[in-house]
Length: 203
Image (cartoon, rainbow, N blue to C red; front, side, top):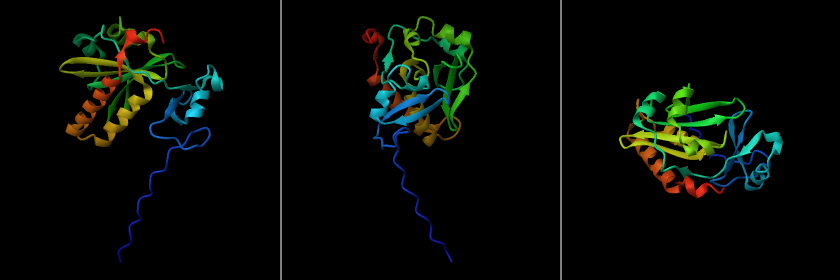
């Protein structure tokens, strides 16, 4: 006798980690600097954690700025020296550990790469984006194509959103056509949101 298949449970709505209120889509995130994890937060709680020193500095609010720097480009030689095995990677500064963290998306999620600090310092020399990058909560997102290397400063949760999108559609060794299409569309959206750094100098 065939057993009746159980219908999959509907997805549970995301809730604020602090007040348990349902959070809308999209919603804000905090970075738990002790666990190095993203935490969903409602608007009210998010505003509380924008105050300097809130919760002893453990939680930091992820900002919502997207920047580019038209005056600085990473050259082909500098990109090759970084030794990144794929065409897309992101990096952020871990304040507690005092080090650079480099990750790239793949079928298993975000994979950490051991960074060559000297190579990264050389590649980012003269980059104003690297200068204004906020530790833990912002990242430099890089993509290498036949047109060169694109570099954007983005909220750290945008990078993990990209990781999740690619993981769901990744096929084969290089991701396949669907993953490449998702990557193209994602970078197009980010480029549309990004503004030149010179417009952000007063912030």
